[in-house]
Length: 139
Length: 139
Length: 139
Length: 139
Image 1: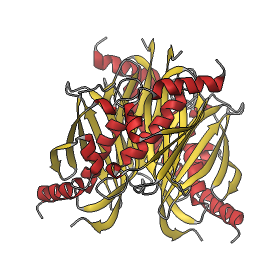
Image 2: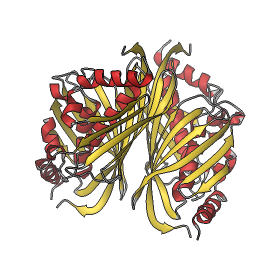
Image 3: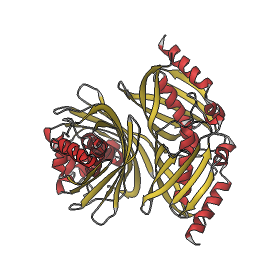
Image 4: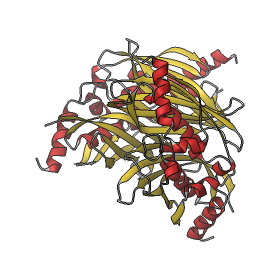
Protein backbone atom coordinates (compact mmCIF):
# COMPACT_ATOMS: atom_id res chain seq x y z
CA UNK A 1 0.00 0.00 0.00
CA UNK A 2 1.35 3.46 -0.87
CA UNK A 3 2.50 5.21 2.26
CA UNK A 4 0.04 8.14 2.53
CA UNK A 5 -2.81 5.83 1.60
CA UNK A 6 -1.68 3.43 4.29
CA UNK A 7 -1.56 6.20 6.91
CA UNK A 8 -5.05 7.29 5.86
CA UNK A 9 -6.38 3.72 5.95
CA UNK A 10 -5.04 3.21 9.49
CA UNK A 11 -6.47 6.57 10.54
CA UNK A 12 -9.92 5.73 9.13
CA UNK A 13 -9.93 2.29 10.75
CA UNK A 14 -8.90 3.69 14.15
CA UNK A 15 -11.04 6.83 13.99
CA UNK A 16 -14.23 5.07 12.89
CA UNK A 17 -14.39 3.28 16.27
CA UNK A 18 -13.00 6.09 18.43
CA UNK A 19 -16.02 7.35 20.37
CA UNK A 20 -14.05 9.73 22.54
CA UNK A 21 -12.24 11.45 19.64
CA UNK A 22 -15.70 11.84 18.10
CA UNK A 23 -17.09 13.35 21.32
CA UNK A 24 -14.16 15.78 21.29
CA UNK A 25 -15.09 16.75 17.72
CA UNK A 26 -11.64 15.90 16.37
CA UNK A 27 -11.12 16.35 12.62
CA UNK A 28 -8.12 15.24 10.59
CA UNK A 29 -6.29 18.03 8.78
CA UNK A 30 -3.30 15.96 7.66
CA UNK A 31 -2.53 12.25 7.79
CA UNK A 32 0.85 11.14 6.51
CA UNK A 33 3.51 8.68 7.61
CA UNK A 34 4.84 10.03 10.89
CA UNK A 35 3.01 13.34 10.53
CA UNK A 36 -0.53 14.00 11.75
CA UNK A 37 -2.47 17.25 12.20
CA UNK A 38 -5.79 17.24 14.07
CA UNK A 39 -8.17 20.07 14.95
CA UNK A 40 -11.02 20.56 17.42
CA UNK A 41 -13.18 23.32 18.87
CA UNK A 42 -13.47 23.79 22.63
CA UNK A 43 -17.04 23.59 23.97
CA UNK A 44 -18.50 24.78 27.28
CA UNK A 45 -18.69 21.24 28.69
CA UNK A 46 -14.89 20.94 28.29
CA UNK A 47 -14.09 23.71 30.79
CA UNK A 48 -12.82 23.21 34.35
CA UNK A 49 -13.34 25.09 37.61
CA UNK A 50 -11.11 27.98 36.46
CA UNK A 51 -13.32 28.60 33.39
CA UNK A 52 -10.64 27.41 30.98
CA UNK A 53 -10.34 24.09 29.13
CA UNK A 54 -9.64 21.16 31.47
CA UNK A 55 -6.04 19.95 31.03
CA UNK A 56 -7.45 16.63 29.87
CA UNK A 57 -8.94 18.20 26.74
CA UNK A 58 -5.75 19.33 25.05
CA UNK A 59 -3.99 16.23 26.41
CA UNK A 60 -6.64 14.07 24.71
CA UNK A 61 -6.26 15.94 21.42
CA UNK A 62 -2.46 15.57 21.56
CA UNK A 63 -2.72 11.92 22.62
CA UNK A 64 -5.02 11.21 19.66
CA UNK A 65 -2.58 12.94 17.30
CA UNK A 66 0.26 10.88 18.82
CA UNK A 67 -1.75 7.64 18.52
CA UNK A 68 -2.71 8.22 14.89
CA UNK A 69 0.85 9.31 14.06
CA UNK A 70 2.68 6.38 15.65
CA UNK A 71 0.21 3.91 14.14
CA UNK A 72 0.55 5.45 10.66
CA UNK A 73 3.42 3.04 9.88
CA UNK A 74 0.85 0.20 10.05
CA UNK A 75 2.53 -1.47 13.06
CA UNK A 76 0.19 -1.57 16.08
CA UNK A 77 1.67 0.89 18.59
CA UNK A 78 0.62 1.61 22.15
CA UNK A 79 1.53 4.51 24.41
CA UNK A 80 4.08 3.80 27.14
CA UNK A 81 4.69 7.26 28.54
CA UNK A 82 3.46 10.72 27.61
CA UNK A 83 4.11 14.14 29.08
CA UNK A 84 2.53 17.51 28.47
CA UNK A 85 3.22 21.12 29.42
CA UNK A 86 0.25 23.43 29.40
CA UNK A 87 1.72 26.72 28.23
CA UNK A 88 -1.36 28.98 27.92
CA UNK A 89 -5.00 28.88 29.03
CA UNK A 90 -7.45 27.60 26.41
CA UNK A 91 -10.89 29.28 26.25
CA UNK A 92 -14.33 28.23 25.10
CA UNK A 93 -14.70 28.43 21.29
CA UNK A 94 -10.93 28.28 20.73
CA UNK A 95 -9.95 26.17 17.72
CA UNK A 96 -7.02 23.98 18.74
CA UNK A 97 -4.69 22.31 16.26
CA UNK A 98 -2.28 19.54 17.28
CA UNK A 99 0.61 18.59 15.01
CA UNK A 100 2.39 15.30 15.74
CA UNK A 101 5.77 14.43 14.26
CA UNK A 102 8.09 11.46 14.58
CA UNK A 103 11.35 12.38 16.33
CA UNK A 104 12.97 8.95 16.29
CA UNK A 105 12.02 5.29 16.21
CA UNK A 106 13.86 2.03 16.66
CA UNK A 107 12.43 -1.47 16.15
CA UNK A 108 10.39 -1.41 19.32
CA UNK A 109 10.16 2.17 20.60
CA UNK A 110 9.09 5.45 18.99
CA UNK A 111 9.44 9.05 20.20
CA UNK A 112 7.01 11.71 19.01
CA UNK A 113 6.55 15.43 19.59
CA UNK A 114 3.14 17.10 19.45
CA UNK A 115 2.67 20.88 19.48
CA UNK A 116 -0.82 22.29 20.06
CA UNK A 117 -1.73 25.83 18.99
CA UNK A 118 -4.84 27.97 19.17
CA UNK A 119 -6.43 29.85 16.23
CA UNK A 120 -4.00 32.77 16.74
CA UNK A 121 -0.99 30.47 16.39
CA UNK A 122 -0.08 30.65 20.10
CA UNK A 123 1.45 27.45 21.47
CA UNK A 124 -0.96 26.14 24.13
CA UNK A 125 0.71 22.80 24.89
CA UNK A 126 3.92 20.83 24.25
CA UNK A 127 3.48 17.06 24.34
CA UNK A 128 6.01 14.23 24.13
CA UNK A 129 5.00 10.61 23.59
CA UNK A 130 6.86 7.32 23.73
CA UNK A 131 5.22 4.27 22.17
CA UNK A 132 5.89 0.56 22.12
CA UNK A 133 5.60 -1.03 18.67
CA UNK A 134 3.99 -4.46 18.70
CA UNK A 135 4.69 -7.10 16.07
CA UNK A 136 1.11 -7.11 14.75
CA UNK A 137 0.07 -4.79 11.92
CA UNK A 138 -3.26 -3.04 11.20
CA UNK A 139 -3.50 -4.42 7.64
CA UNK B 1 -10.25 27.66 58.43
CA UNK B 2 -9.53 24.14 59.67
CA UNK B 3 -7.43 22.26 57.15
CA UNK B 4 -9.79 19.47 55.99
CA UNK B 5 -12.67 21.95 55.83
CA UNK B 6 -10.48 24.24 53.76
CA UNK B 7 -9.56 21.43 51.35
CA UNK B 8 -13.26 20.55 51.04
CA UNK B 9 -14.25 24.18 50.50
CA UNK B 10 -11.70 24.57 47.71
CA UNK B 11 -12.83 21.28 46.17
CA UNK B 12 -16.49 22.33 46.22
CA UNK B 13 -15.72 25.73 44.75
CA UNK B 14 -13.61 24.25 41.94
CA UNK B 15 -15.82 21.23 41.27
CA UNK B 16 -19.09 23.17 41.15
CA UNK B 17 -17.92 24.93 37.98
CA UNK B 18 -15.99 22.03 36.45
CA UNK B 19 -18.14 20.91 33.53
CA UNK B 20 -15.64 18.40 32.21
CA UNK B 21 -15.12 16.62 35.55
CA UNK B 22 -18.91 16.44 35.72
CA UNK B 23 -19.10 14.96 32.19
CA UNK B 24 -16.53 12.39 33.25
CA UNK B 25 -18.75 11.52 36.23
CA UNK B 26 -15.99 12.18 38.76
CA UNK B 27 -16.90 11.75 42.45
CA UNK B 28 -14.81 12.72 45.44
CA UNK B 29 -13.92 9.85 47.77
CA UNK B 30 -11.43 11.76 49.93
CA UNK B 31 -10.47 15.44 50.12
CA UNK B 32 -7.73 16.37 52.56
CA UNK B 33 -4.74 18.66 52.55
CA UNK B 34 -2.37 17.21 49.95
CA UNK B 35 -4.38 14.00 49.59
CA UNK B 36 -7.26 13.51 47.15
CA UNK B 37 -9.08 10.38 45.98
CA UNK B 38 -11.48 10.55 43.03
CA UNK B 39 -13.51 7.85 41.32
CA UNK B 40 -15.28 7.49 37.98
CA UNK B 41 -16.89 4.83 35.80
CA UNK B 42 -15.82 4.33 32.20
CA UNK B 43 -18.63 4.70 29.65
CA UNK B 44 -18.84 3.56 26.01
CA UNK B 45 -18.32 7.09 24.66
CA UNK B 46 -14.91 7.20 26.43
CA UNK B 47 -13.39 4.37 24.36
CA UNK B 48 -10.90 4.75 21.53
CA UNK B 49 -10.28 2.89 18.28
CA UNK B 50 -8.79 -0.10 20.13
CA UNK B 51 -12.00 -0.57 22.18
CA UNK B 52 -10.32 0.50 25.42
CA UNK B 53 -10.54 3.81 27.28
CA UNK B 54 -8.89 6.68 25.39
CA UNK B 55 -5.64 7.69 27.12
CA UNK B 56 -7.19 11.10 27.74
CA UNK B 57 -9.81 9.63 30.07
CA UNK B 58 -7.53 8.35 32.81
CA UNK B 59 -5.22 11.34 32.21
CA UNK B 60 -8.19 13.64 32.85
CA UNK B 61 -9.15 11.80 36.04
CA UNK B 62 -5.54 11.97 37.30
CA UNK B 63 -5.21 15.61 36.25
CA UNK B 64 -8.39 16.47 38.18
CA UNK B 65 -7.07 14.62 41.25
CA UNK B 66 -3.77 16.52 40.89
CA UNK B 67 -5.57 19.87 40.47
CA UNK B 68 -7.84 19.37 43.50
CA UNK B 69 -4.89 18.10 45.55
CA UNK B 70 -2.45 20.91 44.77
CA UNK B 71 -5.16 23.53 45.30
CA UNK B 72 -6.19 22.01 48.65
CA UNK B 73 -3.69 24.28 50.46
CA UNK B 74 -5.87 27.25 49.37
CA UNK B 75 -3.13 28.79 47.20
CA UNK B 76 -4.18 28.99 43.53
CA UNK B 77 -2.02 26.44 41.72
CA UNK B 78 -1.73 25.72 38.02
CA UNK B 79 -0.21 22.75 36.22
CA UNK B 80 3.20 23.31 34.62
CA UNK B 81 4.09 19.80 33.50
CA UNK B 82 2.44 16.42 33.87
CA UNK B 83 3.38 12.95 32.71
CA UNK B 84 1.52 9.68 32.67
CA UNK B 85 2.31 6.04 32.00
CA UNK B 86 -0.59 3.91 30.92
CA UNK B 87 0.19 0.54 32.50
CA UNK B 88 -2.91 -1.54 31.64
CA UNK B 89 -5.87 -1.26 29.27
CA UNK B 90 -9.05 0.17 30.83
CA UNK B 91 -12.37 -1.33 29.71
CA UNK B 92 -15.95 -0.08 29.53
CA UNK B 93 -17.68 -0.21 32.94
CA UNK B 94 -14.39 -0.25 34.84
CA UNK B 95 -14.47 1.82 38.02
CA UNK B 96 -11.26 3.85 38.16
CA UNK B 97 -9.91 5.41 41.34
CA UNK B 98 -7.16 8.03 41.30
CA UNK B 99 -5.25 8.84 44.48
CA UNK B 100 -3.15 12.02 44.48
CA UNK B 101 -0.51 12.73 47.10
CA UNK B 102 1.91 15.55 47.69
CA UNK B 103 5.53 14.44 47.25
CA UNK B 104 7.20 17.78 47.92
CA UNK B 105 6.47 21.49 47.69
CA UNK B 106 8.53 24.64 47.98
CA UNK B 107 7.20 28.21 47.96
CA UNK B 108 6.47 28.25 44.25
CA UNK B 109 6.54 24.67 42.95
CA UNK B 110 4.78 21.47 44.02
CA UNK B 111 5.36 17.83 42.98
CA UNK B 112 2.52 15.32 43.18
CA UNK B 113 2.11 11.63 42.42
CA UNK B 114 -1.18 10.16 41.29
CA UNK B 115 -1.82 6.40 41.05
CA UNK B 116 -4.92 5.18 39.23
CA UNK B 117 -6.35 1.71 39.85
CA UNK B 118 -9.28 -0.26 38.53
CA UNK B 119 -11.93 -2.04 40.65
CA UNK B 120 -9.63 -5.09 41.04
CA UNK B 121 -6.86 -2.94 42.48
CA UNK B 122 -4.66 -3.20 39.37
CA UNK B 123 -2.57 -0.09 38.69
CA UNK B 124 -3.77 1.31 35.34
CA UNK B 125 -1.77 4.54 35.29
CA UNK B 126 1.09 6.34 37.07
CA UNK B 127 0.90 10.14 36.86
CA UNK B 128 3.34 12.81 38.02
CA UNK B 129 2.39 16.48 38.20
CA UNK B 130 4.35 19.67 38.77
CA UNK B 131 2.41 22.82 39.65
CA UNK B 132 3.21 26.50 39.99
CA UNK B 133 1.76 28.12 43.09
CA UNK B 134 0.46 31.64 42.52
CA UNK B 135 0.28 34.26 45.25
CA UNK B 136 -3.53 34.48 45.16
CA UNK B 137 -5.66 32.26 47.38
CA UNK B 138 -9.09 30.68 46.81
CA UNK B 139 -10.55 32.14 50.05
CA UNK C 1 18.29 -17.96 44.19
CA UNK C 2 16.68 -16.34 47.23
CA UNK C 3 15.29 -12.94 46.32
CA UNK C 4 17.48 -10.54 48.36
CA UNK C 5 20.57 -12.56 47.45
CA UNK C 6 19.57 -12.35 43.81
CA UNK C 7 19.11 -8.57 44.02
CA UNK C 8 22.54 -8.30 45.67
CA UNK C 9 24.16 -10.56 43.09
CA UNK C 10 22.75 -8.46 40.23
CA UNK C 11 23.85 -5.27 41.98
CA UNK C 12 27.40 -6.57 42.48
CA UNK C 13 27.64 -7.75 38.88
CA UNK C 14 26.39 -4.43 37.51
CA UNK C 15 28.24 -2.19 39.97
CA UNK C 16 31.62 -3.90 39.58
CA UNK C 17 31.80 -2.68 35.96
CA UNK C 18 30.10 0.67 36.44
CA UNK C 19 32.91 3.19 36.13
CA UNK C 20 30.67 6.22 36.27
CA UNK C 21 28.82 5.15 39.43
CA UNK C 22 32.27 4.62 40.91
CA UNK C 23 33.41 8.11 39.85
CA UNK C 24 30.29 9.50 41.49
CA UNK C 25 31.26 7.66 44.70
CA UNK C 26 27.95 5.80 44.88
CA UNK C 27 27.52 3.35 47.78
CA UNK C 28 24.73 0.85 48.25
CA UNK C 29 22.72 1.29 51.45
CA UNK C 30 19.96 -1.19 50.61
CA UNK C 31 19.52 -3.71 47.81
CA UNK C 32 16.29 -5.69 47.77
CA UNK C 33 13.83 -6.82 45.13
CA UNK C 34 12.27 -3.65 43.78
CA UNK C 35 13.82 -1.47 46.50
CA UNK C 36 17.23 0.19 46.27
CA UNK C 37 18.86 2.92 48.37
CA UNK C 38 22.09 4.55 47.21
CA UNK C 39 24.17 7.33 48.73
CA UNK C 40 26.87 9.69 47.51
CA UNK C 41 28.72 12.84 48.56
CA UNK C 42 28.82 15.90 46.32
CA UNK C 43 32.35 17.04 45.40
CA UNK C 44 33.56 20.39 44.02
CA UNK C 45 34.02 19.00 40.50
CA UNK C 46 30.28 18.16 40.41
CA UNK C 47 29.14 21.79 40.63
CA UNK C 48 27.80 23.91 37.77
CA UNK C 49 28.04 27.59 36.90
CA UNK C 50 25.59 28.55 39.67
CA UNK C 51 27.84 26.96 42.33
CA UNK C 52 25.38 24.15 43.04
CA UNK C 53 25.45 20.53 41.91
CA UNK C 54 24.93 20.12 38.15
CA UNK C 55 21.48 18.67 37.45
CA UNK C 56 23.21 15.67 35.91
CA UNK C 57 24.68 14.64 39.27
CA UNK C 58 21.46 13.90 41.11
CA UNK C 59 19.94 12.59 37.87
CA UNK C 60 22.83 10.12 37.60
CA UNK C 61 22.41 8.99 41.21
CA UNK C 62 18.65 8.51 40.69
CA UNK C 63 19.20 6.80 37.35
CA UNK C 64 21.67 4.37 38.96
CA UNK C 65 19.16 3.64 41.76
CA UNK C 66 16.47 3.08 39.12
CA UNK C 67 18.77 0.81 37.06
CA UNK C 68 19.81 -1.33 40.03
CA UNK C 69 16.20 -1.49 41.24
CA UNK C 70 14.58 -2.51 37.96
CA UNK C 71 17.31 -5.09 37.31
CA UNK C 72 16.95 -6.57 40.80
CA UNK C 73 14.35 -9.04 39.51
CA UNK C 74 17.15 -10.64 37.42
CA UNK C 75 15.53 -9.76 34.09
CA UNK C 76 17.75 -7.43 32.01
CA UNK C 77 15.97 -4.08 31.99
CA UNK C 78 16.83 -0.92 30.10
CA UNK C 79 15.58 2.63 30.60
CA UNK C 80 12.99 3.88 28.09
CA UNK C 81 12.04 7.21 29.59
CA UNK C 82 12.98 9.03 32.76
CA UNK C 83 11.97 12.38 34.20
CA UNK C 84 13.26 14.40 37.12
CA UNK C 85 12.21 17.49 39.03
CA UNK C 86 14.98 19.32 40.83
CA UNK C 87 13.24 20.62 43.95
CA UNK C 88 16.11 22.20 45.91
CA UNK C 89 19.70 23.27 45.22
CA UNK C 90 22.36 20.71 46.21
CA UNK C 91 25.62 22.05 47.66
CA UNK C 92 29.19 20.80 47.85
CA UNK C 93 29.67 18.21 50.64
CA UNK C 94 25.97 17.38 50.76
CA UNK C 95 25.29 13.68 51.28
CA UNK C 96 22.53 12.65 48.89
CA UNK C 97 20.46 9.51 49.31
CA UNK C 98 18.27 8.14 46.50
CA UNK C 99 15.57 5.59 47.28
CA UNK C 100 14.05 3.71 44.32
CA UNK C 101 10.84 1.72 44.59
CA UNK C 102 8.79 -0.28 42.15
CA UNK C 103 5.40 1.33 41.48
CA UNK C 104 4.10 -1.20 38.98
CA UNK C 105 5.38 -3.68 36.43
CA UNK C 106 3.81 -5.75 33.69
CA UNK C 107 5.57 -8.40 31.57
CA UNK C 108 7.48 -5.88 29.49
CA UNK C 109 7.34 -2.49 31.20
CA UNK C 110 8.16 -1.30 34.73
CA UNK C 111 7.44 2.01 36.46
CA UNK C 112 9.68 3.19 39.30
CA UNK C 113 9.77 6.19 41.59
CA UNK C 114 13.01 7.55 43.03
CA UNK C 115 13.14 10.21 45.75
CA UNK C 116 16.47 11.89 46.51
CA UNK C 117 17.09 13.63 49.83
CA UNK C 118 19.99 15.51 51.37
CA UNK C 119 21.50 14.83 54.81
CA UNK C 120 18.81 16.98 56.49
CA UNK C 121 16.03 14.89 54.95
CA UNK C 122 14.98 17.61 52.47
CA UNK C 123 13.70 16.25 49.16
CA UNK C 124 16.12 17.49 46.47
CA UNK C 125 14.72 15.60 43.48
CA UNK C 126 11.73 13.51 42.37
CA UNK C 127 12.52 11.02 39.60
CA UNK C 128 10.24 8.71 37.62
CA UNK C 129 11.60 5.92 35.43
CA UNK C 130 10.04 3.60 32.88
CA UNK C 131 12.01 0.52 31.82
CA UNK C 132 11.66 -2.13 29.16
CA UNK C 133 12.23 -5.66 30.41
CA UNK C 134 14.13 -7.87 27.98
CA UNK C 135 13.77 -11.63 27.86
CA UNK C 136 17.38 -12.27 28.90
CA UNK C 137 18.33 -12.64 32.56
CA UNK C 138 21.49 -11.67 34.46
CA UNK C 139 21.97 -15.17 35.93
CA UNK D 1 23.94 44.08 24.17
CA UNK D 2 23.50 42.50 20.75
CA UNK D 3 21.66 39.22 21.07
CA UNK D 4 24.30 36.66 19.97
CA UNK D 5 26.95 38.52 21.96
CA UNK D 6 24.65 38.40 24.97
CA UNK D 7 24.08 34.65 24.59
CA UNK D 8 27.85 34.15 24.30
CA UNK D 9 28.54 36.35 27.32
CA UNK D 10 26.06 34.37 29.44
CA UNK D 11 27.55 31.09 28.19
CA UNK D 12 31.08 32.19 29.04
CA UNK D 13 30.06 33.39 32.49
CA UNK D 14 28.20 30.17 33.28
CA UNK D 15 30.70 27.81 31.65
CA UNK D 16 33.79 29.34 33.27
CA UNK D 17 32.57 28.14 36.68
CA UNK D 18 30.97 24.88 35.58
CA UNK D 19 33.32 22.21 36.87
CA UNK D 20 31.12 19.31 35.88
CA UNK D 21 30.63 20.45 32.27
CA UNK D 22 34.41 20.77 32.18
CA UNK D 23 34.87 17.23 33.56
CA UNK D 24 32.50 16.00 30.85
CA UNK D 25 34.68 17.75 28.25
CA UNK D 26 31.79 19.78 26.88
CA UNK D 27 32.60 22.22 24.05
CA UNK D 28 30.31 24.87 22.60
CA UNK D 29 29.59 24.50 18.88
CA UNK D 30 26.85 27.13 18.67
CA UNK D 31 25.58 29.73 21.15
CA UNK D 32 22.67 31.88 20.03
CA UNK D 33 19.48 33.18 21.58
CA UNK D 34 17.36 30.10 22.23
CA UNK D 35 19.67 27.82 20.25
CA UNK D 36 22.66 25.98 21.70
CA UNK D 37 24.79 23.14 20.31
CA UNK D 38 27.28 21.34 22.58
CA UNK D 39 29.60 18.43 21.89
CA UNK D 40 31.53 15.93 24.00
CA UNK D 41 33.45 12.67 23.66
CA UNK D 42 32.55 9.63 25.76
CA UNK D 43 35.41 8.30 27.91
CA UNK D 44 35.85 4.91 29.61
CA UNK D 45 35.07 6.33 33.07
CA UNK D 46 31.62 7.38 31.77
CA UNK D 47 30.44 3.80 31.11
CA UNK D 48 28.01 1.81 33.24
CA UNK D 49 27.68 -1.87 34.12
CA UNK D 50 26.40 -2.73 30.64
CA UNK D 51 29.57 -1.31 29.01
CA UNK D 52 27.69 1.63 27.47
CA UNK D 53 27.55 5.27 28.59
CA UNK D 54 25.69 5.73 31.88
CA UNK D 55 22.32 7.39 31.29
CA UNK D 56 23.53 10.31 33.38
CA UNK D 57 26.19 11.21 30.82
CA UNK D 58 23.93 12.10 27.91
CA UNK D 59 21.40 13.53 30.39
CA UNK D 60 24.12 15.84 31.72
CA UNK D 61 25.11 16.95 28.23
CA UNK D 62 21.46 17.66 27.34
CA UNK D 63 20.84 19.37 30.67
CA UNK D 64 23.86 21.64 30.08
CA UNK D 65 22.59 22.47 26.58
CA UNK D 66 19.16 23.21 28.06
CA UNK D 67 20.66 25.37 30.84
CA UNK D 68 22.85 27.42 28.48
CA UNK D 69 19.95 27.77 26.02
CA UNK D 70 17.29 28.92 28.48
CA UNK D 71 19.74 31.34 30.11
CA UNK D 72 20.78 32.80 26.75
CA UNK D 73 18.02 35.44 27.03
CA UNK D 74 19.96 36.89 30.02
CA UNK D 75 17.16 36.14 32.52
CA UNK D 76 18.33 33.72 35.24
CA UNK D 77 16.48 30.46 34.56
CA UNK D 78 16.40 27.28 36.60
CA UNK D 79 15.22 23.82 35.64
CA UNK D 80 11.84 22.74 37.01
CA UNK D 81 11.31 19.45 35.23
CA UNK D 82 13.25 17.55 32.60
CA UNK D 83 12.66 14.25 30.86
CA UNK D 84 14.82 12.12 28.61
CA UNK D 85 14.37 9.07 26.40
CA UNK D 86 17.48 7.07 25.73
CA UNK D 87 16.95 5.84 22.18
CA UNK D 88 20.25 4.06 21.39
CA UNK D 89 23.27 2.81 23.35
CA UNK D 90 26.24 5.20 23.44
CA UNK D 91 29.73 3.68 23.27
CA UNK D 92 33.19 4.71 24.44
CA UNK D 93 34.80 7.23 22.05
CA UNK D 94 31.45 8.26 20.57
CA UNK D 95 31.23 11.99 19.87
CA UNK D 96 27.85 13.21 21.10
CA UNK D 97 26.24 16.46 19.97
CA UNK D 98 23.27 17.98 21.80
CA UNK D 99 21.18 20.65 20.09
CA UNK D 100 18.80 22.66 22.31
CA UNK D 101 16.01 24.82 20.90
CA UNK D 102 13.32 26.95 22.44
CA UNK D 103 9.83 25.56 21.81
CA UNK D 104 7.84 28.17 23.67
CA UNK D 105 8.23 30.63 26.53
CA UNK D 106 5.90 32.80 28.53
CA UNK D 107 6.88 35.38 31.17
CA UNK D 108 7.77 32.78 33.79
CA UNK D 109 8.08 29.38 32.10
CA UNK D 110 10.07 28.11 29.11
CA UNK D 111 9.86 24.82 27.20
CA UNK D 112 12.91 23.49 25.38
CA UNK D 113 13.68 20.45 23.25
CA UNK D 114 17.14 18.91 23.09
CA UNK D 115 18.11 16.21 20.58
CA UNK D 116 21.38 14.33 21.08
CA UNK D 117 23.08 12.52 18.21
CA UNK D 118 26.23 10.47 17.80
CA UNK D 119 28.96 11.02 15.17
CA UNK D 120 26.94 9.01 12.62
CA UNK D 121 23.93 11.28 13.04
CA UNK D 122 21.87 8.66 14.93
CA UNK D 123 19.54 10.11 17.56
CA UNK D 124 20.72 8.76 20.93
CA UNK D 125 18.45 10.77 23.23
CA UNK D 126 15.38 13.04 23.17
CA UNK D 127 15.22 15.51 26.07
CA UNK D 128 12.53 17.98 27.09
CA UNK D 129 13.13 20.70 29.66
CA UNK D 130 10.87 23.14 31.48
CA UNK D 131 12.48 26.10 33.22
CA UNK D 132 11.33 28.80 35.60
CA UNK D 133 12.50 32.29 34.67
CA UNK D 134 13.51 34.40 37.66
CA UNK D 135 13.35 38.18 37.67
CA UNK D 136 17.12 38.62 38.03
CA UNK D 137 19.37 38.88 34.98
CA UNK D 138 22.95 37.72 34.38
CA UNK D 139 24.15 41.17 33.22
